[in-house]
Structures are given as C-alpha cells and as structure tokens.
Length: 220
Image (cartoon, rainbow, N blue to C red; front, top):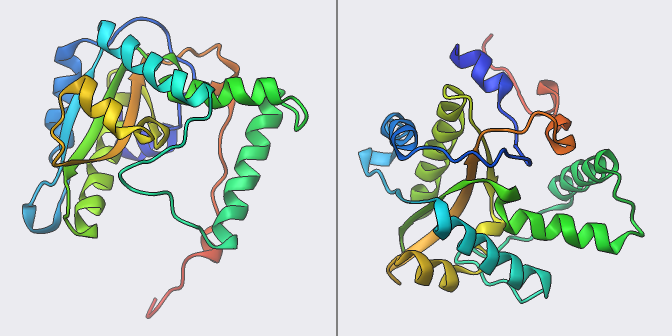
C-alpha cells in the first residue's frame, strides 16, 4: 500500500475478527516500525506482544476492574486538557455514541462500551509499549513515532489497530501478568487484529481540524 494511502486509510478499529495474528507477522511489523526516528537514536521503546490465553487473561483482568469502576492509576496520569481540546474530545465522543446508538440516558450501554475498551475491543492480540521510568518527554515522543509506524505497517498485512490509553489504567496488574519489571513505565497499549468490516463501530470515522485553523505559512 502506498504510504499516503495508508495514512488516509488508517482508523481506530473497534471490532475485530477472532482470527489471531501470527507471531511472524507481528515481528515483521515491529522490525520495520522500529526504523522510526528517535532523539539521538536512543530508541526508547520496548514491547510486550500478547496473544492466545494470555491475551484473554489480560482482557479479563482489565475488564473486571473497569466494570466495577476501580480507580485508575496509570503510570502517565491523564492530563487536564484546556477547553479547546476537550471540546474536540466531546464532539468526537458524542458522534461515536450517536453512531453506535448509545443515548445519554442509557447507562448500561455506556458502561458496556467503556468496558469494551479495556477488553481491547476483543482484539486477538495486543502490544504493550513501555520504556524506562524517569526518562524525559523526548522518550514519549519517540514512542509516538514508533506507534504510528506500527499502525501504518499493520495495514500492509490487512490488519487494523487502535491505540488504547485504557489498557494502561492498571499498570501493576499488567506488569505482574506480563513479567514487566517495576523499573519500566507503561506508556500505551495497541489492539491489533483483522478488522471485522461488518462491525458498526468500524464504519465510524473521526473528523480532523481544517488546516487553516492549525497552520501558518511563512515565506511561501
């Protein structure tokens, strides 16, 4: 797939087929993804790739905690976003709920959708991205670059992804299950698998801010 077409085609997949992704394919994606640039070539990323019974256990652990509203304590606390950005989030969330037929009053459906995030939307595989604790913000920028490469590389194999902060809400449980050292900071999770084209959620597309609102031109 052409790289421009891949960037246009990528979207957050929220419905997956049960077919697992092979270790070989995920390894091929990661082998290319780590060609991402990083500050000083530090390559401040590590990965735990999950599938099979371990993936089921991870989804179950996180979903059980989310379903009873256990307090979240991610390694990277959720920031307080200024109103401009929160409005974008609210607008996208409202459109998604409307698309899924989830009303403001239907708390049961809202909870089910919320818990589905912690279940990686039933993806057959997941990738946990982490780094050393105590590194600067540049380490997170590096991770953002490699995560985008993973999302684009997945398209080459007919796969879809969604990037999940929710998967990092209970880091102690994730570290324990996957034997990730305490010295590591869990950054983000990626659900990966073959998209279910018939899933209603996969027909939703988020909007983007027009360029004239975010770009200024100088000297051209």
